[in-house]
Image (cartoon, rainbow, N blue to C red; front, side, top):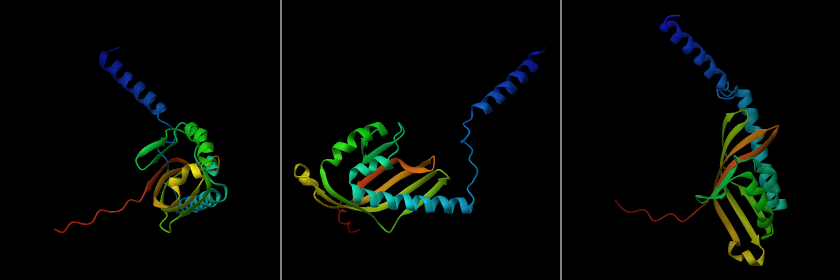
Length: 177
């Protein structure tokens, strides 16, 4: 067989092989308006449940709302606190022992960006009123800031695949021009 035919055959086989290696979810179909609205409504209910349950049950409730996968991570004020779901699951019981009560309130500025039927970016201001055990007294008070996370729906259950909390800091005074 001439060299040019071998090259053509190699290119065809390589092309077919690359097509079969593409992840099945790498080319998702665009969501319909109804699908987007349904996902948004579902994530709104999810975020409301998070605030309600953390307020009623304390930090232990987070175990139901953080993904328990290696992909999960959480950062606070720019620092990684939990590098994966296992680290979060291991640390949450100890964290929970430090608090008498936490009240979590989301702001009225909830923003949702539905990426696919199973992924939604969440962004919202928050207020936490913290009543710690005596050993963690420095955390007492009202804390405000901004939360962002990626919510993922697996098997009909929304969980945060990642989360970032940033506490508000005083803005420096504006300089005159």
